[in-house]
Amino acid sequence: MRIKMGRLAALYLVLAMLLSLFTACISPSTEVTSYPIEITDQLGRVVKLDRMPQRIISLAPSNTEILFALGLADRVVAVTNLCDYPPEAKEKPSIGGFTTTNIEKVIALSPG
Image (cartoon, rainbow, N blue to C red):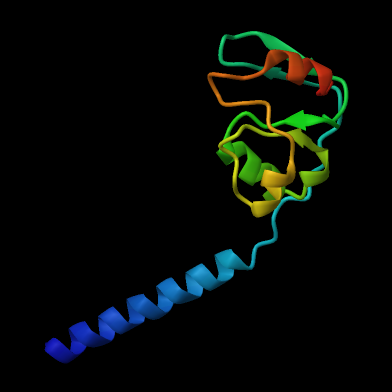
């Protein structure tokens, strides 16, 4: 009985490994977003974007990491003083902290 349970467990393990192998091989979606697009923000307001943003100011370290990971570092024009990863983010101008954002500097950088 113990041998049968061991074989059954081994079979489940092999099936799980095969399933994870096949799901890892699925290619990601290459769907292209067409503009203009409308997005609803957290306050329920509809924001219309006529084109992909070209000048981005990141207001959170997590957003900075995502933007750099997506290959959009060239579009990031400023970050907060807490954005230190990836190391290249420290080379971008700082607009202050999350609660001490320099609004005049944000306006001068013309995000959009």
